[in-house]
Length: 178
Length: 65
Image: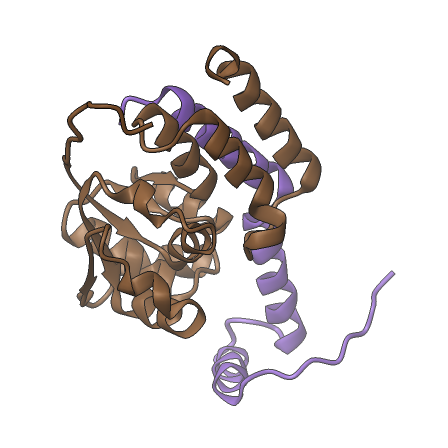
């Protein structure tokens, strides 16, 4: 779906947790993040991705940059304990607050809950894939194929019946373009 | 009905938990483990995960970023 539109770069910085970077790369779809002007990856997340999916950090079509995180505030420490977050999630939330970045990409439920508490928007692999149609980065058919491939090609765990519902909802929304 | 589990706990965590018990912040190690498990399960409920995914799908389809 490249057509002859002019691709725009959103002047938007986001912070990444490991999940979406790993899962999107497993689907060869990390480029759906290409319109973000920068994707800050906290040290702990960088190390996690480096361990599990190093090739994700070598992609040149997205603007990933490693970012050292300042010491966590008392608020973040409390939320980390309350929601049993890992180092990477804690650093990601710290980075959002310290740099006034209001979007976090994560697939972790507890991290999303913590982000909500802190008024930080959180989006995950599924939302980012579906958004790719809205942004004209992928066709509806391509995204439906990617969604269907999640159980076989990725380490993202999602209840099969929920994934089926999501696919069906998208199919209905995009029925005129399939 | 209670179940008994055998689990390995990293030394540092065990030591921190013991300190809390010694200082009187918790009755015993079991109370801390129960509380930790309870909090983990509360923040990882199926219903929450599903709700976040549905919100995310809606944003993917119709969000204005």
